[in-house]
Image (cartoon, rainbow, N blue to C red; front, side):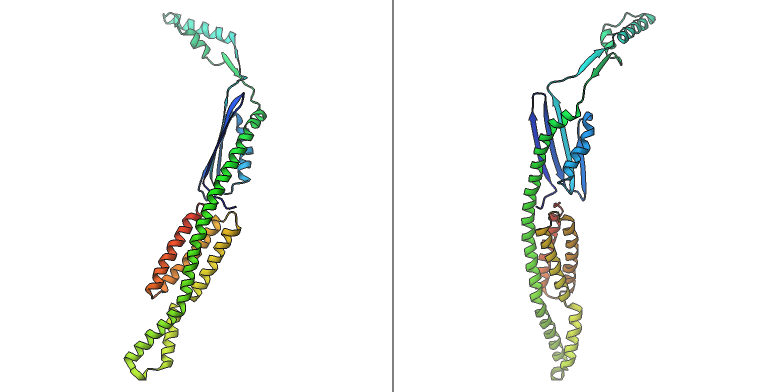
Length: 290
């Protein structure tokens, strides 16, 4: 299924031990630009969650935020009383040496010294992984569903604009013989004006053929239809058509520009403008596709 490169999902769960939240959001990017933000003590899980994303996301700038706020802590704090006593003694000696009384906040000064209080916490990574997994998987599922929903809307819009381009191509094809007749009529009128009944029909045909070589758009019409068929096939059969569509749009634009540069008729010129407008809309929308 075609997906948009933009999406957002958030999921949160509260357990007896913690509040776990996962936020996933993405915007357009030429390639997959993935960042997973975890608490520092869980950095070893970064590659694990990146793999989950890369299994279902091909393109886009994706930012993932995983947060764990514990409500029950198994943190243990121990005191190095010998170090505390040495700090206390040293602070008092410094105060006496400069003729001052020991400061009233000496206890606060002592416990803030390195090594006096030691925090010990057992970070069981597997335990945290089990806490996060369900929340992450639900958020990822919602994120993919959002991208698919937006992708379906984009596909519908692109096919509608593509249908308009097919109408433009058909218009050009129908006008091609009319253009040939118009060229012939113009040249015949010019010769008759100058030479009257003495006008040479062979000369008229030669001049008409020369003008057709210069201004015919038959080849461009054939290539234009081929590009439009390829575009439609990508939208209907490729789940990730973004890059390919961009290339096809470039080739399509080349044919439309050539038709415009060869055109000698206002009706065709107006349809060239319509075709260019449709194609530009397709190019912009295609940039949102994965």
